[in-house]
Image 1 (cartoon, rainbow, N blue to C red):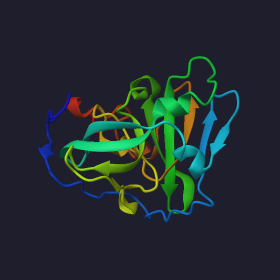
Image 2: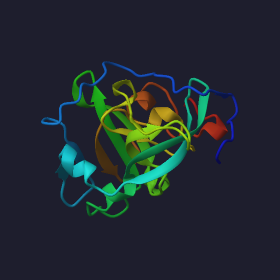
Image 3: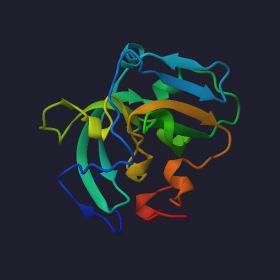
Length: 197
């Protein structure tokens, strides 16, 4: 569904900055990324270990619940599936919760998503991007989630894209994340205008 404007959205050429809480200040010495939950063994990655994982490049449309949509941004990052390959999941894992920094707490923010929808090249933990095919590569900014921000497929509103990502919890049952606990949709499909519960 590339370059299709969902109902209630307007197209923008900019990438607006919207977030809750403080902007995380990256410190490579203390940064880590945890894979936990319904796994046989938890894994914690350092920044260098994360950056050494295979990466993918994908063009992803972004749709924000505040009604803007931005088409054609190109992202490079670690696909969700590469992180799934690092752990042995217990049976019937169908959901994940992706965590990120919130006001100094490495696991203060979270967003829930169905795992099956995140196993292609359009579900990335991104570190750099360019504005369209002809743009120049640049690191994502601290306000956009540096050093690592999850960008979900365009079939989800962008609040599912956790900034300052710190881990993935693998789950058998769906659980509300940060905004979902405040009344936002659990499924968040912009093409069905699933903004709120």
